[in-house]
Length: 322
Image 1 (cartoon, rainbow, N blue to C red):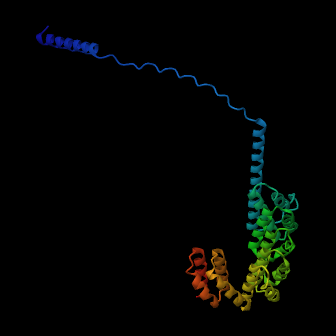
Image 2 (cartoon, one colour; image 1 turned 180 degrees about the vertical axis):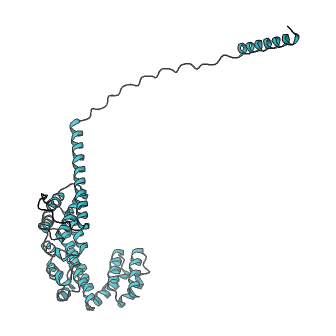
């Protein structure tokens, strides 16, 4: 063996010995102790659910969901029927489908506990009534006669916004309703119809004993400028209830009769210096509604009032005079 070979073998032996020494001197890998077993959690005894109550709640929720789905389906069908063109008559050999009694369906929806379902019901009945569908107007009349106060108010508000004389007889039937709130809303709704149709009904309502209803009726007659009502309105300017007398004077002002208004303007103007802030506020509101130049000095005084509400009403009144 040559010298170079011996030297190579000796080098390899030295490398091997060094590797063994390093392995023996290296620290042993650290091992983490096993985690301690989790302590058992004390069992807690939960109250047992009432299966009958849970089943009843689920049934009620399912019923409500079905009602909403059905009312929404009817609403979509009605909108689609109004939007699409008339379909051709079925051929003689095609069996005709039985017609859907939408009026009956909408009427039944008025009994729902869900407000949206009730709304779909009365809006559907109104649309059917305007389309001349038999029974729709009668169903609305029955709801306005026998329904709950909240439902009656919702129906009246909806049909009043439509301003359709078709519902004049409905309004007329409610002018003697036991609720003064209903009668007042009826008077307000009549003010949105043509004067020659609504005027006679409103004049009948001037015999009402409730000031709220009287004010609404007087205001509607003034808005309509229904001339036959002028003598009755003149008489009401001396009504024992001041708010009614003021409303009658304001209504006559719209006819061009300012005599009662002038008398009341000076009475109200004297209250500009009242110690009662509510009295000053009511006076400012009434003066603003008269819209007459003779109100100006009193409104200018009230524009400097210590109360911001009085100042606001007075400033509105002055703006209406410019």
